Length: 181
Image 1 (cartoon, rainbow, N blue to C red):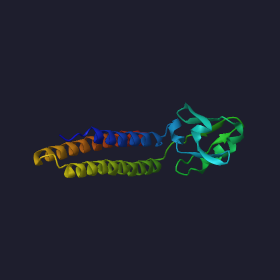
Image 2 (cartoon, rainbow, N blue to C red):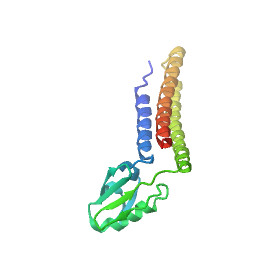
Image 3 (cartoon, rainbow, N blue to C red):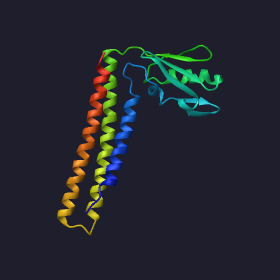
């Protein structure tokens, strides 16, 4: 019998990565994960923001960034301002960086949904790649009979559909959240 546990784990990791990407997508409310992709030049190298500062959401429209070392405050502000996809304008008082989250326009919301749809397609391609690897493994398995191979292929197709549906549901939920004013 062909075991699909490994393929299930691979597909689950794809969905998990996709969910993590969805957390980074801006929805109009302040969330610390919005700044997760920011790289800050500190101590002569680029480091993730969470390694040089603590990010918290004080309310729905404001992120607070507290640097571990106050000498990095300028480079943190520049890194946040430099990420054009976020469109944020941080302000610092020498100790804390305040990042106001402006409300999204209808046009910007549609653009964010469109960019998110590209991430959906990447996740689905990764799921299809897992499916194709499993199908190749089924084809080269000499000890399996034809009927067992057909059943295994059907099982892999069902897994693929299940995980594609999970991705579609997560995208629909995120799209609704983005478009909600």
